Length: 274
Image 1 (cartoon, helix red, strand yellow):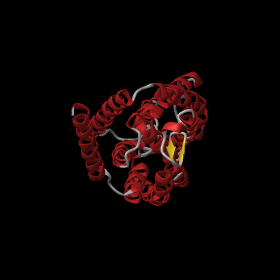
Image 2 (tube, one colour):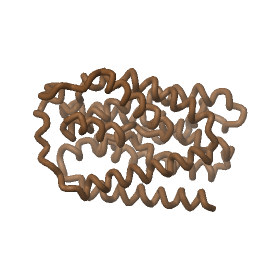
Image 3 (cartoon, rainbow, N blue to C red):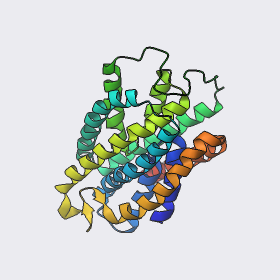
Image 4 (cartoon, rainbow, N blue to C red):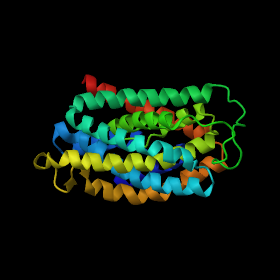
């Protein structure tokens, strides 16, 4: 099951420039529950393990987007300091919240992400003439560095709370900055790497104090057996998803992903009510 989950998540991570946490977290929550992990730490373990997985999916996706010259490294440098600070702060906050609160936050974010993607699909697309072939040749004045730092801090903190690579938030922000969509996706994939790295460090550090309450083979809030099975499958399929972004129409796959997200949200809402 971990291998199947990793393969599906890796493909959509590359396809949409996301880290895959929207799928991994609820799936791991149900798997960890079935394994009788401590109920009050299950979601923390799911979040921490997911952030560790995103390190590898984002690295594989980043490499492919970079080969297609779709990463704006100037924006990456501007946003990374804020990303790291915000992500670490988010992991500290997550460690203080109960599983119930985290579950509510995550469920609401799934609804937001699915609705955001749905609105983009049904809206009439505008001609994408913002940028040429090189994402680092920018025809308009970039916003000030403080804008990118602030945006990075917000994106990092939210991303670490719900264990995502940040693409759901980064891509809309970059398109507002007049970045071409494919380059926004590629840059979001690059930014997902420091989010995942800082988030993993934060969840490990915050979980070490809870070691006596965690299952065997846990490194802080990272459950190593799950991570070990998720990594190879996700790394194999992430480049395939990234190539699909640049070579085929993705509307149908995006619709399927949106339906899947709404299904997960309904299931988690039902579990909360139950």
